[in-house]
Image (cartoon, rainbow, N blue to C red; front, side, top):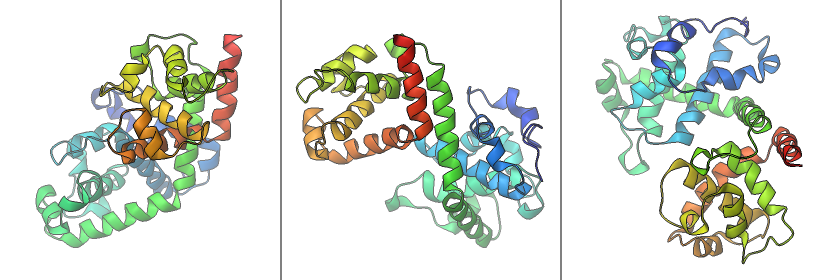
Length: 286
């Protein structure tokens, strides 16, 4: 059995030297610690790598070159640890065992497009393993874990985002806009009496501080993308526009871009705890 109040074995002691980001998988899971109590250690680590998988998917940008670094960073271990006992992965200590499997899964699924999916044999050569069946088994385990523990992962992200919204400052520099801030400010914009198709972007721009022409532009900076995804969500959920209509409104060539941004935003916005956090945020404004 595991004790969530104790450091994750093999992970916490490396956090300072190789995990620079403010939030880790463990910070998400601490929010639902009570739900995880009583789990066997191996089950907990599969939940943990499922959270890390979600983090990597949300951030994107994985390549064959940076997959080991990114997996090690999110897992709070050294990259060298991912390659421990490569011929006997089943004897690796946690969290190296589960993170090693996630690294194989990332090579197969997360870091490539469907047209360039790496074969199991190719991945085995990249990571220095003789037998590709180990890679195949690892990918199966991670894929199954992601499905079985989806509810835990979803709740962990909702709890973490709710906590951040509840403590978010009412006013921030637009360039500091995060997904958390975009959720709260989008809710504020949609509650305005004059919210409509004609001025939805203007109201969102007023709340976020990101000009409407910038939201509808091509900027790739994080705060612009967050405001743009919020616009997709508002136009879809509040005004019930079709994705092609939203694409035209925001000057996107392909409505699949709108769909992807909308899903990323709405996945977190949907939780009951997020609704409570947004209400708490709104109370700060009064």
